[in-house]
Amino acid sequence: MTHPDYGRAFGLFRDAAGPAWTDYTRHAFVQKLGDGTLPRAAFLHYLVQDYVFLTHFTRGWALAIVKSETLEETRLSASLVQGLVHGEMQLHVKICADEGISEQTLFEAAESPANLAYTRYVMDAGQAGDLCDLLAALAPCVFGYGEIGLQLAQTRAADTPYGDWIDTYAGDDYQALCRDVGVMLDGALTRRIGSPLDLAPRWPRLCKRFSTATALEVGFWQMGLDQT
Image (cartoon, rainbow, N blue to C red; front, side):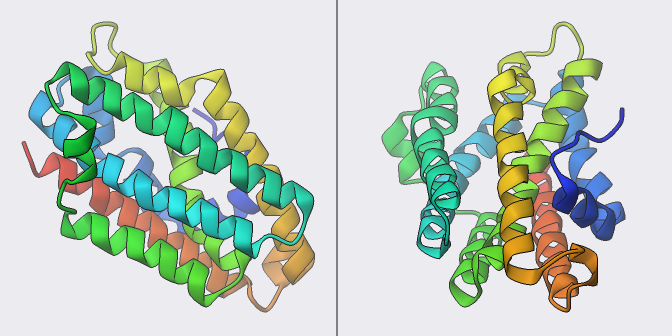
């Protein structure tokens, strides 16, 4: 499968991340989602932790509103906050409710060390830097799940019990979101560091932000797999 086109900056970031990007998007946890062999207990543990993660991810996009300098940046960041709270997080609530796990239980769940490391890294990037730093740390989650969704939509087993999860990230709505964030990322970086992006003095530091967040995504999958 070819990589999806989510914009110039993402392609450069992905290439700079090297093998870590494959480790993330082709992780054993991901493959087991596709072929249906992931134990349900591991999936539910991941979902609980991912719900907690998304509460912090929402805070990250709320911070993006504060860091925005244009109306377009503000609007997209605000729409992502709404989408996370009323869309993606509700997918987790629905699946967990079917397993007898309430939303209050999700909200009060203790964070795993992998979760703490990732979410606090993202928030620190945004608080210490500008929108470029924050988007570089947020981007692997947004784009990685889009790429994983498309990959699994093509290779999934027909009887995998994780079809709803796959369909969410392979679906038109999520793929449109990835493209919109890609446009925002290209514009935000060009506006702040200039073009060509990869010749800007700040580019190596932003690549490190992206690569670090990618490595933390790998750790997040491994956290779920370790429950098997």
